[in-house]
Image (tube, rainbow, N blue to C red; front, top):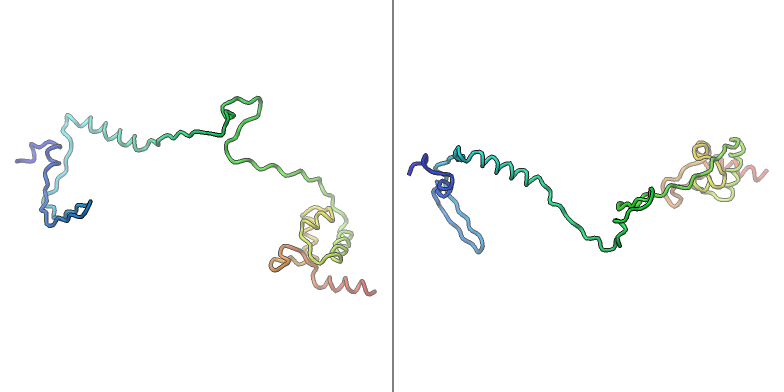
Length: 179
């Protein structure tokens, strides 16, 4: 039988290999062999347009994502009713509420603030920035500048995240009590 006269269907049924070993296990079939002849097939000219169309359809079908439908049980129809004005229903995660607008804090004189801080550190040895902002009612940046000059920030240990007076100012504070 010559290969030139075969159609695609007939050619796929012919094996061009020498089978050396066949293994059959429960539910599995394995075949080993050596390929003797290899050939490529293409459709006849009268089927070429149909084959091209089939390939395009296969490609398009693989790119289409299957649509999913979900049944919303606890909606009670709220998502389907139009709401008046700007009231829109958001199905996504809830947005964070904006923080309460803080009133603007005015800077006090640097010397007065230092005195206030020394008094606060007499009451308690360690303060967090938030606590100091509440006690002094000063802007955060201004308070940080002064704390960097007067205090040590505790990064580790039991007083983590708090400010403590530098040792030279602790000694100064003790000297002021004795005089």
